[in-house]
Amino acid sequence: MAGRRSLGRRFGWLWGAYAVSTAGTWLAFDAFALLAVLVLDAGPTQVSLLAAVGPAVGAAVSVPLGPWVEVRRKRPVMIATDLVRCAVLLSIPVAFALGRLGFVQLLLVSVAVAAADITFSAAAGAFLKDLVPRRDLLVANGRFEATNWTASMVGPPLGGAAIGLLGPVTTVVGNAVSYLLSAFGLRAMGGEEKHPVRPGPARPGPGQATCSTAGAASWPTRRCARSSSTRSSRTP
Image (cartoon, rainbow, N blue to C red; front, side, top):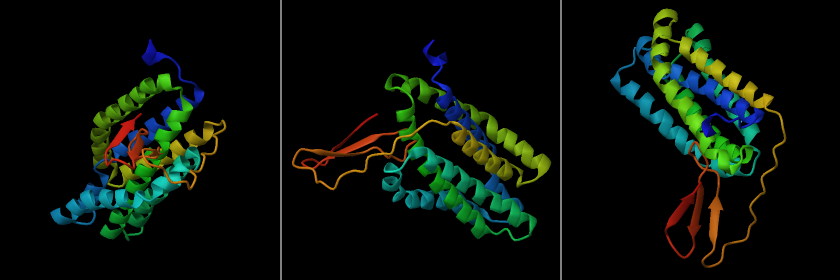
């Protein structure tokens, strides 16, 4: 069966790291909003800002990181973003314990996590293309998608139960730990990763295309723009 065949030990570590961090993310799906309401007595406007502004600003911040990610090895980038997400999330329970947690901190953490999420996804997509043969990309992507959908269904109810039983910062701590475990899993993969080739300074001539493989989607896309046309095309 194509869907059950092994894709190698290194893919298993990558898949496991993704599964752990995704489970933590969905476990803490409503954590920030609940912290804002239950701990900070935030109103509807502040909760809406937390839900919208953080991810939007995080996406904008991650845009200039695309070219930087493209010319670097992807696994160290993924490990670094996992550690960044772990660190900024752990600042919330620390501030809560000290009685210093504020709305601005929640907003800044939301921005940092969103930017790291997008950077991680761009690096992960390019890394997966180099990790498995092209003929296995569909199977690999299917396993990641199945993991994500399972976590999205199971995580929020379990997170709500954990908040009810253990307090509002519990799922934030769980999410932070999941990123730390993801970083350990990526580190345990081993193996060599070749250095990306830096693009040359040459400009494309008429009818030639310039392409970039670093995208903001979960899996890599190739963007090509012809100088003689305003149309663009994408191929996996």
